[in-house]
Image (cartoon, rainbow, N blue to C red):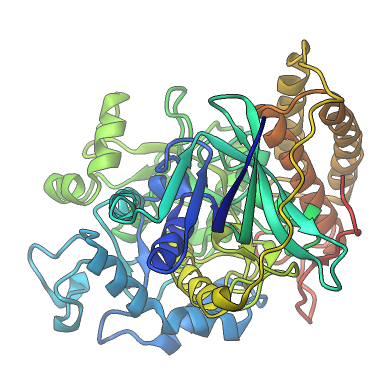
Length: 540
């Protein structure tokens, strides 16, 4: 007989946002962390570049804010940007206090971003930034952050980590005057049983939805679960049409989503055509350091114009010792594939990388549903606008996780428990003997999203995608209603819903702005506005 597990707070997701929040609550609450795989298998772990923060005396909050607003193409919420940037130093100091070993400058000089005020940490520069403000741990910042925070979890007996567990849905008590969260249903992938969690607060920190696309830099778990769960629970979403394509993913049959950090371009890397000709100067005066949307479109244009499978990123003109010390992960991975980046250019292509839209939240991370929070890439805070500036993502994770934790701690002592959710009912379903349907639908979804809802769009392409996703969702929901859930089915159900939200948002935007570029409306409108979608009372 199934039992109900009870926690003060259930955190869905184990990236930088979820881990930071759990640690901030650990002294005063009983917390569960739900992780699809191992704790470190989220997008945070694979983040290379670093974290943008105002750390150098030559930099300023106003400058970082201004750069973010420019990159966001008129859609950033300035109050959210300033809120985040003002807390950037505090976020970095907290990470350092936890033990994150950021890279220090070996031979400090003003040109390398050294200043006495930053304790000789090396600060890199990336696209869209007017100053060196990216603090990093070589080229594996996410790995350093993830491993450090996971290690800190072991010090807190009040935090229970549940690996290989997949959240299915947030449970909302709709009989209340205000719909209020009471818990969450979770599939235990080790037992294949659905477990019921009773919680006073649920925090969604599941990352983005880039697995909606055939080519992505994200790990396999980035299937939009949190956005889909929040939508079904009754939360609004915003700006789902802004999907960031990272300009430089390693192009190699054995690479599988290996990212080449923007910091390579920040340290002088040049983008080249197959014949060795540089081209970025023809698209933007900032060249390789233009914002990601401009660089990705430029690469896409040149690949289509030439019929080329890739372009090339060349850093070989820098000293080999510099390359190997600043980019050890990239150097070794490329070398394993027969590419010596000290001597050869790196073949690269754009790939889906980041979901700039998401679940609408306030500056505490609070959603439209009482006691449901959303933080990190799952959320829409107003920080990123129409195009996320490099290395603002991990900063957002830390800042809003801490803000959400502060909010929960002020409420937790006065928050009454809702009635526990009913136990999960499997009496009307059977085991599937046609799992091939899942894999076929998954493949079809990702292919038409890449072909029709990619870097360059048209109304006709979007309408084709809309027609196909509606048919797919009908088939998937029918399948979901008749068979026992599995990890693959849960992900497919969520991803098909999020794909529909992306397509609907893209169709509503009759302009080109930031990451949304359509041949039918190639210019931006005079007045910028967010695309806000309102869920029906119940979304199957």
